[in-house]
Length: 502
Image 1 (cartoon, one colour):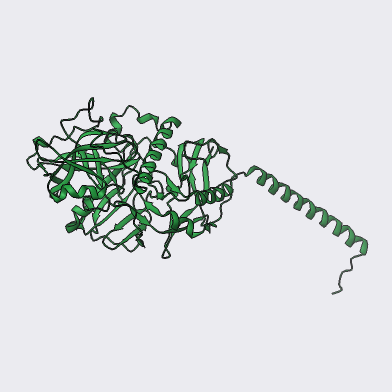
Image 2: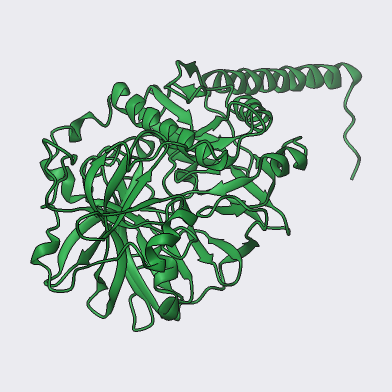
């Protein structure tokens, strides 16, 4: 068969027609792509380095959604439920007249102001500037943990029972305190006690209550943990006075009682403070549960059963619940990765960790490890917002803002100076943040542990800087959300595991 012959003029016309169609399609495709790009103002996150969540998930919740995760109770463990004091899962929420103010900027400014007061208190204690005497100023168990914002502090609360017959008390649990205390009858809300939600404990109606003599070692050892002690002239009972540095204090009689954590976890002769004069940022709770490191703390007083081992998980929002667990409880700990507790003394109560760096969006920030080693760092359940040395915070803020430049900045809220207006966005993508600890552990924060939402038009980076690089850094409870935090005090280490609760 003969090969068809195409003339040069025919080929030229064919080529021009083909080129015109190709050019048209290319231009149309380019224009459409350009138009789509122009309309798509949503940031494109890099894989594995960002969190993408709905904006509404960052805002205060109004209904309770109890968590069932992590609450496996067995004979070897004691588990208490943890709730946020300001959240809808708290019993205080139902009677609180301020429960609808959680979306109000003034409300959050007050919470952050109280948080700064606590930080000032911690720095004061570590700097040994606490010279005022409040006395002269007038096995394993798990408890559910609730958030503490409803009753005036940023702490989380658990419910325990005291006395015979047992009376339930909601106490703010605190890894930065040693003494457990509750308000006791003989004080009143109008005179020497603050107003609490539950009935005030009456030791005279308890068959197991005893006063501690001021001549005992239990009384005199209070001074070793920074608690003032004295002696009642009329009864020779031991008097205690504990002050938190922000002018909050509790003064009363040091005694012993039957402490009930669960129906099977009961401790006779538990040493506690029976507060007769109390004032401060405890509003609504019945007192404090001290989880610090001294002989007076619940960790040490229950050491024979739990071997100085406890863990907790703080819920992601105030509408969910977490837990506080004492003892290993036979639960699998394969997911828990540990880092050593600091051997550098950080007061009698605090748990120090050796932070060496911070990652943002998968990239380690250019911060010398000496910035952290010179200031040192503690982990604290009672502080809300993490505090960093200014050098470290400024590097974190700069890196975070760079990765969030597609979102509009807005005005600051109290100590939080990196805030965004997300009211026109359905979802938001923000960089992952992780702490790097000495020994090689890199612990990524949960998606809920990075931002603090006041409202859709004010969502802030939940970190703040200290006044100078010499002040102790604090890993606060926002950054601990949803992490299972394990304190193996006997083993000299603290561990973390992801997604410990809802």
